[in-house]
Length: 189
Image 1 (cartoon, rainbow, N blue to C red):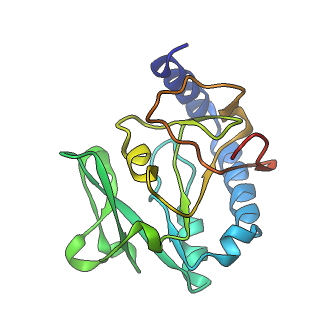
Image 2: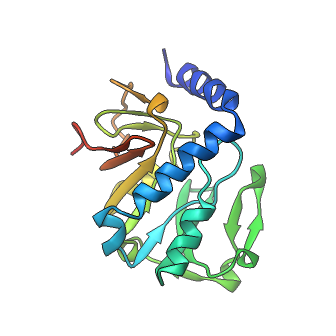
């Protein structure tokens, strides 16, 4: 299957999950994430504000705030397909943009350099055991990860992990994948 077919297949699976099944997976992911050393040592967390089929990131954002961590979210720059991250302290500092994405209002938030983000939680639809991922299209995260110096992790269900994805030269893997069954590190560099 090509990337488009793989996206369609996993999207169909995610749509079929009941609210209870989804919440159960998210609870396990969130609890496990907070126990990881990379989370404990991170002062600044980069994360998206989830929507639709994505795993709910609000409990993770709120846990980070409760622990005194800095939380920053991306703003997409469609002309260059780049991401810029901004520190935010309240959901009121976000605005709906295209595709109903919640992004920071630059005038109300503080820009954070990629070097300042200790742990980046990278979204994705499908992953392989090497850490390669299929995202939502556009390549924004692959561009950002190109010279990102710190730790990366993605949240997924076990059903979102396959043995091997087709990889293109610009694709970059995440270092860790956290599922409802724990941390997957096998084969991930």
